Each structure stands twice: as structure tokens, then as C-alpha cells.
Length: 339
Image 1: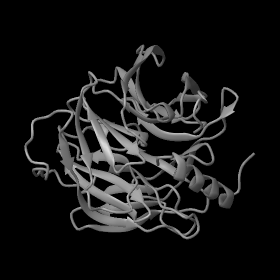
Image 2 (image 1 turned 180 degrees about the vertical axis):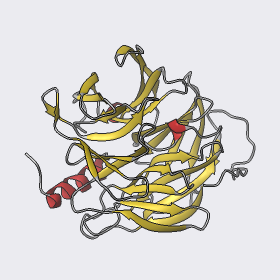
Image 3 (image 1 turned 30 degrees about the horizontal axis):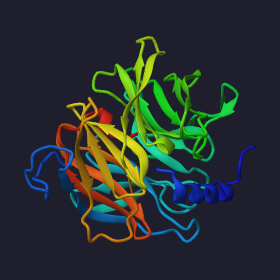
Image 4 (image 1 turned 90 degrees about the vertical axis):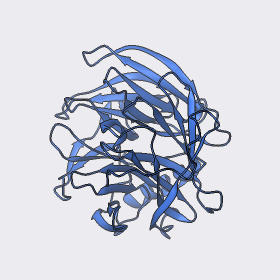
């Protein structure tokens, strides 16, 4: 049954408090210095700007889904923004100015990414189980996919596009420990056919292709692990295995981004930080906000400048929703721009 907008936002606020996630090309040295790469390396992120404050209507703010558009502006979603407040913002990171890009009275969007097929911006509506799209400049909202997949309605969290424009969606379905009913769903680029690529997952959240589109990295929030799904080249699954077990303490695995060297940036919900691994599972570094930053509880996602190493991380908590920047370990590609 379709929920009312007010009830949907209340549900999202509760889930967010527990576990839910959701351009310049210049580079600069990180404040962490030139320490050798290793598990003890800390990369200090620097504050760019505050984008949101806690919404009275929903009791929180939660930024997600940063993605650069073709003009070099950064688009960011606010998962719990109420009706009338920007649900998607456009940020000029050079001038440190933000403007409303899209709002509506219904959606609770957890990720954003541009399609390589039609160039539109695709958003996951977690509360209503839908994928919607907008024109590149905003406006012209369309429902791309809605309804059940194999008899069950989705809770779509993050998305990844293959090179042909087909969508791969992390369908969390449940945020309860021990409940392995989450899925990865593949939706054809025309939105007509949706199939379950992998099931029996534990609150799957982040999703990203590897550098050569041979497989998908996914994070399972309630198990704090990253799994690798090898694809068969025909839209199906060849194999699946646990790739990395994330030692995150009280934090949990959120969204994933992949840079040009194949490094994984694993966002942490419950800690304003990201863990960085290479494709073989070696911990390379931890990205953290300065120790003096108060009221920030989660780093949900990151976008790395396409062709550059300037990275922008979405961070949220009682202090509001912020953008932080740091130097990534390698250049940004499609797999580190949105989703």
C-alpha cells in the first residue's frame, strides 16, 4: 500500500537515525601530509560549507548522492527534506554557493546519478520503492520504475549504471540485523524489465562497478562487509563472495565509490569518516573530518572530480549537512561520481 508523504518522511527519519544512509580539477595536498599509504594513514578532510540544518518537520537532515553535472556543479540529495525544502541541491563548489535544484511533496531520495544512455539524472525514492528521473537541468520529472520485483516492493538505496545505461540497484528491504532479504536488482535501460541479480543479502546499501565493469562491489550494512559480484557479461551473475570485512566499531557500511586505480571508498554511517581499500582488500587509509568538528555522525558518500583527485564527501548529523573535501588517492571516474 502506498504511504502518504508525511508518513513516508517520518519512517525515513526513524530509519535514518538508526542506519540509513542516503568542480574543479585542481588538486591540493591533504592536511594529513605525505605519509606513506597504509592502514594507519589518516587523510584529513576540510570543511567546504554547510548545506542544510536539521529540519523541524523530520527531526534530522541527511545528505547523500553527490554527483557532478556536465558544468562541474555538484548535485546533492537531502534524504529527509520535507515538502517545500530542496530535495536536490546544486552546489557551485568553487564559489561555495548552493541553490535548490528540485523539490516535490512526496519523494525521499537516497542517491543520484546521471545515465550514460539518456543523460538524465536518476534518483532512488527509498520510501515509495521507485526510481525517478529529471532532465539534466532539473524539471521534467518522470517515474522510470515503480512496482514489485519478483513479488516484492523495493526499498531502492543506491544505483550504478553499466556502460549501456542499464541500472543496478541496491534494494535494502530491511535494516534489521539477521534479516537477509535484501537484493541487487537489475533494471533495463528502458525501465520495462526488472530482475533480481542477487538475493539473500543483509541490508545491501552501497553499490559500484569496478573499473572495467566486470563486477559490482556492494556493501551490506548490518554485516559490515563488502561483497563482490562477478558478472557473466550477459546481464547475469557468475559468482559472489565476501571481499572485505570492515572493522568499523559502532559505525556501519554505507555507500561505495571506486576511483581510477580501483580503490574503494567505503562510507561509514555512524562515524564521519570513510575507509579506503585497494581492490585486493588492503586497508590503505581512513578519511576523517577534523577532531574538533562536533555534531557530525555519518559520512554517507563521496564524489571525486572526473579526471581530477579533488573529492567531496557528504557528512551529516545534529550540526547539519555539510560538504567536506580531501585529496583522493587516484582520479575520479564514473564509478566515483554519483550513486
